[in-house]
Length: 381
Ligand SMILES: Nc1nc2c(ncn2[C@@H]2O[C@H](COP(=O)(O)OP(=O)(O)O)[C@@H](O)[C@H]2O)c(=O)[nH]1
Ligand SMILES: [Mg+2]
Image (cartoon, rainbow, N blue to C red; front, side, top):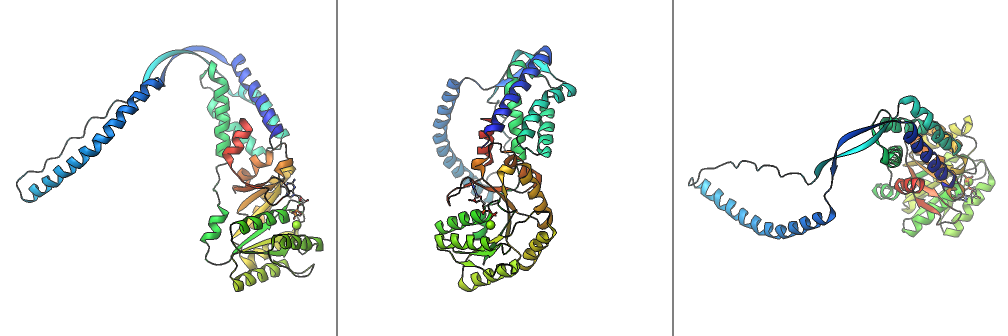
């Protein structure tokens, strides 16, 4: 994951910083810098604090006792109540001193020119245009017409990029297992996505996780468009020892899911995982089918499954499914064979929906919880 994008980003970032350094307008200024005192000093202070902490407890008990007594005396009208003046604030922990630095400044035109390389690297690695624009705006805010310490250019550019990636991944999170636990009754998850994106395999992976956590489930073979799909889910069910509810090939998928939920209710089963057919997302019949499934069964969660390696296609598909039926979360598969990683960076931002898991292989255990921090570290590390 990210082999290509990581290298290209690093390269482009290096060039960007170098250009700012070479072509930015240079001037020397005096700035006020706030800095922590040397470590040794901090340690001594901490130890001192520790000592006073114990004393403080004693003091507190004493003060509480005095307060108690005071109250009694006030109540008995022996003492007049006095209001204590607040103590003056202590001086800050940080010290200030002045230092002379050589700064660089770049204007908007220079920025656009310098950013081009970075833009190209992202485009080549399937990062969506919206995401590139967002990164561009963030970097611009941090770097254009701002005096940057010449020695810190690399660091500042890297930090700004990291910050904008954090913002890009900042979509509302979903904890699948917490949601299941919170639901009173059967929890229905419907998986949608185009053919071959990995829906059936992902369902089997999640079923395996549920089994591991001792949460009962059944699978609904609602990809009735292809006989092989029903068979494929059946095989996973057999391997995992989990029941699969199926109808004949060509039957109504909404009815299959309805039956699976009915079965789960009757048997006290907690979760239903429903597979669906995936022709192209633009296919009108498919969209109508998805809408009917949603209308009839009112799923607790609609998860879009997309192939990470298809890059911008996965992003476009996610957007289409979201517009058609309103997805709640995303799982990207085949990240083990995706060297670019653009979809991982883009799909959540474009849809406003969280990626919850990444598929990273073909075995049941190859499903990783999505961790934006880890992704950012991998990308920029
Ligand atoms: N390498 C890899 N292959 C995967 C992953 N997820 C699914 N696949 C493979 O992708 C192919 C299509 O998956 P499938 O679940 O049938 O897709 P569906 O048509 O959406 O149900 C199968 O050969 C899977 O084994 C993954 O995370 N990594
Ligand atoms: Mg399938």
